[in-house]
Length: 311
Ligand SMILES: Nc1ncnc2c1ncn2[C@@H]1O[C@H](COP(=O)(O)OP(=O)(O)OP(=O)(O)O)[C@@H](O)[C@H]1O
Ligand SMILES: [Mg+2]
Image 1 (cartoon, rainbow, N blue to C red):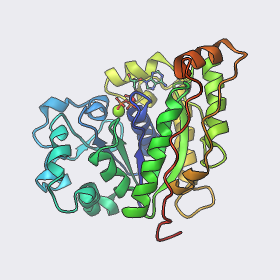
Image 2 (tube, rainbow, N blue to C red):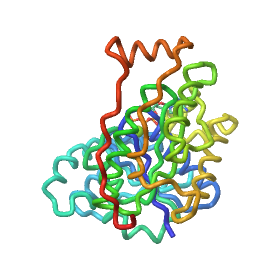
Image 3 (cartoon, rainbow, N blue to C red):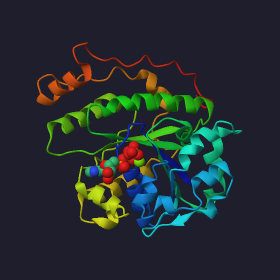
C-alpha cells in the first residue's frame, strides 16, 4: 500500500524541501518506487531535483486547475524518484481553487490514479497554511514536521498542529504526525543544543520526535544548487547517513503500527512553550528577543477540537 507523507511547517527555511528530496532519494536507493510532489509555487523542489521551473510547459498548476492528468507532466529524476513539478503558475492556483467544487481535495484527486504505481508519495508544501497546504494535508496519511534547532522555530509548530487537528476532523480522519525532525543543527552552538532539548521537552510527550538530527552543513545548499540530493552530491557527508536513517525510521512508522505518531488533536494537552534557561547566554538572548520586557509570551489558548470519526 502506498504511503503518502506531507512534509509541512509554515515557517520558511526549516528544510522541508531538503527533507523531501533526500528522504525520497534514500527510499529510492533502497529500491522503493517514490513520487515527489512539489506543492510550492517557489518550485524549490523542482529546481533542487535538477529541472528549470520556468521552462515547464505543463506543471502541477495544470493538473490541479485544468484537470490535466499527472502523466502529462510527470518527470523521472536522475537519482530515482519521479517528480510532479511546479513553478510560479501554482501561486495562481491558491486563488483560483477557491471557486472550485471540492477545492480541498484537488491534490488527492490528482494523485488517486497514481497510487498503485508507487510505494511512497512525498509532498513538499509551501511555508504557509493556505489552500495548497490544506490540500496536501487532506491527501496524505502522515505529516513529517521539520523543525530548525532554534528557539523561535518552535512556535510555528503549534499553529500547524492546530490546523492539522481541524483538517483531521473535517477532511481526513487518517491524518497523523509521523514525527518531528530536528534540522539545521549546528553542533558548535549551545543555542542549537538547548533548542534540541526544548523540542524534545515540549513535543516529545505528545508527538514522536525523530531520534535523528540533521546537522547543518553547507553541502546541502551546494547540492541544491547542483540539482542533486546530498546522497548523490556528497555521499560522505554525515547528512547523507542521517537522511538514510530518517527514511528507515519512516518505514518503521507505518499507519496502524504502534510506532506511528499521535493524531494531531492531542495538541490540546500541550502546555505553554518551555522557558529558555536564564543561566546561558543563549537563553538570555532568547528572552530578550522573544519576550522583550513584556514578560513571557504564552500560547494562544488551544481550540477545543471535536474528536474525529475514529475518535
Ligand atoms: N542541514 C542543512 N544544513 C545547511 N543548510 C541546509 C540544510 N538543510 C537545508 N539547508 C539549506 O537551507 C535553505 C532552506 O532549506 P529548504 O529550502 O529545504 O527549506 P524549506 O523549509 O523548504 O524552505 P521554504 O519554506 O522556503 O520552502 C536552503 O538553502 C537549503 O539548501
Ligand atoms: Mg521549500
